[in-house]
Image (cartoon, rainbow, N blue to C red; front, side, top):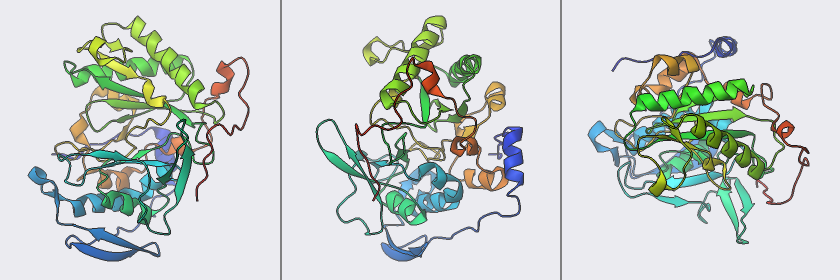
Length: 347
């Protein structure tokens, strides 16, 4: 397949020009071995079953998945740091049985940081935190194909620094309708003067993120996302739906899924590989690229590292304190700056 371009915004090009010529060196990992001990950033790490096929039809092994994440780590890690990681493990590869795991296992390395989050049940769960290359490889070695980090940082897990929408097509929706739905959402956010970023989900849909000033609680962020989703679905009933109950949801509509902003929900991170044929990747794109048309399979495990080395992080603005919307202005009273409702401390 030809190598596509993600066509980043001019502001992003200027950001990357400042770092041109300083491309991070590529780290080559072992490709075979049942149990291999290596050093990553001064930390000792054990990788296992490197020969195991993870995408048998595409010839991609577990070692290939680990190498991909090592290759993209300079651009990926800033988006994961200081956030709890919900692990979805595929021990038998992309098409084997998967299961979610929140609590970091007891046999974790002593250097792995965790984020303690108290749930309404009273349980306190120690989530792993991916702070560096070693912890990234450790999580992937457990069989985590895609990465699902918390929407708020560990120092205050009840106050997100972005809200997001998962544009999830029904079974009778072509991908062109997903692109149309994304543009409808983009127009609405632009009218409200909300900055937004878009990426492919790596599966069948698109993800749209709005960087916000941290302050409003998770429930307030969810409330804003729901209100906008319901309003848009009412205005564009032939394209969108906000009906969350699957039994009542039209199969030929795109769900504007606001519920991914609910407590404890996550989306696949930027640059995550997805457990689908050809190992597609959740990749940032520009709104101009969405208008022109693109395909989920344009961005894959085999070509995304090259795109990143050439073009840099298309979502660098999500990490910046600038161009963030002050969501608290939408409420009559700004929420207090700090709340101990759900304490979390990295350790």
